[in-house]
Length: 413
Image (cartoon, rainbow, N blue to C red; front, side, top):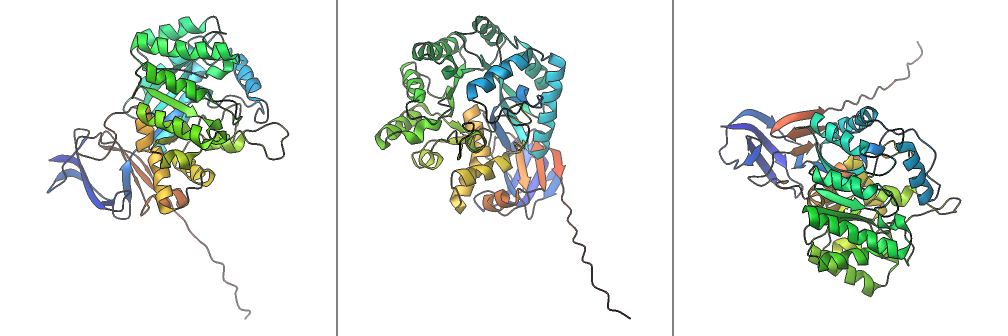
């Protein structure tokens, strides 16, 4: 006897499926009987949503109208604001964001914990506490993130070691914040050194600009190959890729495939942030369609919600993020929209290295049902009706009611 049977749904490929769940795992549904049955006619079922690149501790920070300021100014102001963070207020802000995500079908968030001379260990400790609070609802995978540089910040290296000794699975950085090319290279090496020492994975924000001369992703990938980091590396942004020659781009795609690396791309940053005062501001976005065509997995990086950089617009709903990606990357065909859906489910899980995320027997029973026939309809309507299955149980349900009231003109008597 299964615990739960989902009957009559369609999968993202348009096939009719029944899914049986027992003890938090998907099992063979043939001739299955269950204690609870969900009649899923009219719903599409897919693996649940994953946020693979998020700065949870930056959520709901008092705004500072920084959208049009230079990137370095934004980061410097964030550092100073972090000095006032406490564990209590940070946990509360993180929890506000997680409650919204959980109701929309997010079951896993890979989030950055700033460890630096401003925040010390507050962000890391707050994420650990939030992880405990949301256990069994949303998994929080912590990336140790020396936001202001392992070299320039005299406290960062020691704090990063402390967090890695505590069991964090990822070490990451934005190496270009070091600015000097020699120091950027040293920063990249230091992250790989720490990942090797502690047996963790490495993560890099790369080329958060579309200036053609910025191509640190190439350095990151070559060093990843030299050090044997296949399956242990994640990269994000890569905004300058589209400004390279075709030969250079395909050389980089080949390294990405060899390393089995997925790329987190932010359509939000590409569309929202830009050079102050520019007529057509743009920070750029990686060439998503070409990445896909060359066998590189793309996931979506939403970044944060209610941050001091952008207090509005970034709704913490991956379905909306995928619609935005479809616009920004011109993924307007049925297959393009299906790929955008994969970015928030399968590809997000792949980048995060979340094992067992899927719909085959043996997979985690973490699923999302949306009232739509296929990914194209789901991303067009943003599916307000959803059922979230977490560990084989219904964890959230969204309903939608629409009433059109027609006022008929009364004929005079």
